[in-house]
Image (cartoon, rainbow, N blue to C red; front, side, top):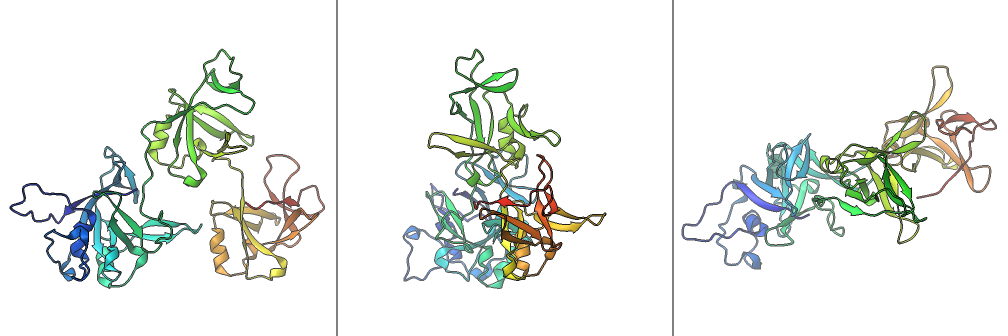
Amino acid sequence: MKPAIEKIQPAPAEPKEIKKPQKMTWNQEVAPLFPVKKSEPEPELEGLDIPPLKIATIKKPWLYRFWDVSQKFLFLVDNKLVANPRDSNAPEHLIAVLPNTVLDPKKQAVFMGLSDEIHTFSCVKSGEGKPQLQIVGRSIMELYRKKEELKSFSFYSKTDGSPETCSFESAEFPVPNPKETISTPLREKVPRLYRIWDISQKFLFLVNNIIVANARTSNAPEVFMEVLPNTALDPKMQPIFMGPNGRKHSLSCVKAGEGEPQLQLVETDIKKLYNTNEHSLSFTFYSKTDGSPETCSFESAEFPELFMEVFPNAAIDPKMQPIFMGPQGRKHSLSCVKSGEGQPQLQLVETDITKLYEKREKLFTFTFYSKTDGSPETCSFESAEFPGWFISTSLEPNKPVRLSRQGGAENTLFYFERK
């Protein structure tokens, strides 16, 4: 999204004889911060009386109010910057702006941060390698005075989309990917309504507060489903909230004891889930076109199909094919330790698999020797900490995955498929 702008301070001096002041574009607004040579005139700035500004005289950041084109303003909630309508309970936040005078002035690179002047925006890569925006404890004035490139703290700013809007592109992660700019998700005003039926031509009906699938000749009223996106999760997964139209209820996935996950209809308004902007995994479904161009599927975000992330352990003999393993997106890794009774056991611990890989250390407790085993289509994973013990599954359903020796009742051979 391209935020609109309103400068708060310092207030510009108004010319005495101008009867109809015209709001400046962003490029015109910040032009004094980035003086260009006279041999390189900017068409947008022609005819404007913009006094020259000595960069060295800037003693305080300029403060701006920003809002996006869907009229969401910036608020600080739990040290996170969020975009919400102006009726939010949190106090609206002004953004401090200073120029980065070391980078190309034509790109109008700026530092941006909170109005307290001791927290600044920074762009870094997440564990999954995706650029992300962070608020870090760095003084914006200190960054400005350093006179260094500091691209991770810099944003190329420009008038964009219309004369009234602008955009901020990360200097650390610039084009060729134009999507990596400061952005906010589009906000839906009302849920979208859908009629949903399965491939056997059974439609959805509400019977005794339970959603059932029946032929269209059913006496019960057909249900249209309200759908809203879950903007707190990865948009590539197309996460959505779902609930029957007009009921202020939502579909939810729960687990009773060690049983199978089950679908429930609970008294939670789908609009409230959407507006809270939280993960709410039990109410979320990953949606996608599936089977054919005309059909789709809805996978529970609370109980998704599990893919394992795998990294090699480069510190151990590669002939053993040593690897680190952990569930996708959870920042957890599989580890082998001894129980109180001295039995090797498998644990899921809160250790990012990417960090294990980057350590370049042996880390036997997190390492498994992998190999084709049993048949050309199957493989096994042997603990490097406890050789002879393998990741295994029980013949009974819903039992924890654990470590076992080969040749027993447990399954130690696995099929695999790369995502």
